[in-house]
Image (cartoon, helix red, strand yellow):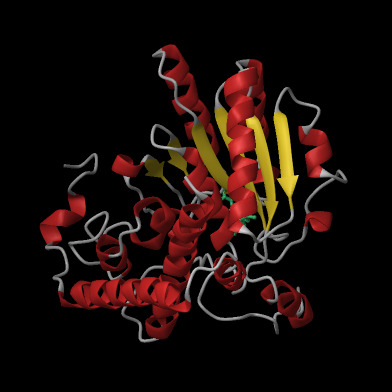
Length: 321
Ligand SMILES: Cc1ncc(C[n+]2csc(CCOP(=O)(O)OP(=O)(O)O)c2C)c(N)n1
C-alpha cells in the first residue's frame, strides 16, 4: 500500500470512530440508548493502526471499550447504531448493546464486559490455530486494568511457553476506572516485567495511527519470524468518563491540564494534518469526511426507524432456546 493510500485508510477509520461517537454523545442523554457506553475517544489511533496492519487472516478479541475496534474492523454503522438503540437490526439483534459487539466475517470474534476475560480466549484461539496448522495470528486488546487480573498472567505464561502466535495489545490509559497503577500494583514497571517472559515487546507513546501501524507490522513480523508471541504497549488518554459520555475532570482523579496536552496531539487532527502535509487536497479530505458524515447520519436514522425485537427473541441464542 502506498503511503497516501495508507494514511487515507487510517484517516477514514479514525474519522469514522470519532464521528459515530460524537453522534452517540448528542443523543445519549435523551435516553434512547439503554446500554452503558464506554467511549473510545482518544484511543482511535490504536485500534485503527493495529487493525490496518493485521491483514485478512487474523482473529481479534477486544474489551467492553470497543466501539473503535468494531468500527475500525467493519467500517459499517447500520448494525452498530441499531445495536446501541436495542433494535432488531443490530449486531446482536439489539440484545447485546455497546459491550457485546463482534463481526466474525472481519475476524472480530468477541468483546466482553468482564475485565480480562477475552485474553484466555485469544490464547485458546491461537492454540487451536497452531493445532489445526492454520497460519493465523490472534490479537487481543485489553486495558491496563486487565493486567491486574490473574488470568492475564496465566494467559501470557501459556502463550510464551507454547510459543503461540498471539499479539497482546495493552491500551494503557493509566486508569482502571479511577485508580492509577500506583494504587493497584506492587511493582514498578509493567513492561520491564513482561520483558522477562519469552515474548517480543514493543512500546511507544504516540497518537499517530501511522506509527502504530508500523510498530504493529514489526510485532507481526517478529511473531512470524521468531515463533513467539508479541506484546504491544501503547499509551493513550481517555477523553471522557470511564463509563458515559461526559467529561469528568471534576471527579478529582485527574485534571484538565493533562487533557489539553493530549488534545494538542489528538489522533484525528494529527492524521488530518499529515494528509495535508503529503499534499492530499482539502477537497479530497472534505469529500471523505462528508461521505462518512452522511453514512453515520443515515445509519442512525435507519436505526431509529427500525423495530425493537419481539419478546420471543429474548430467549433465542441462549441455553434456554
Ligand atoms: C472481572 C471484572 N472485575 C471488575 C470489573 C469492574 N470493572 C469494569 S471496568 C474496570 C476497569 C478496567 O480498566 P482497564 O482494563 O484499564 O480498561 P479501561 O476501562 O481503562 O479501558 C473494572 C475494574 C469487571 N467488569 N470485571
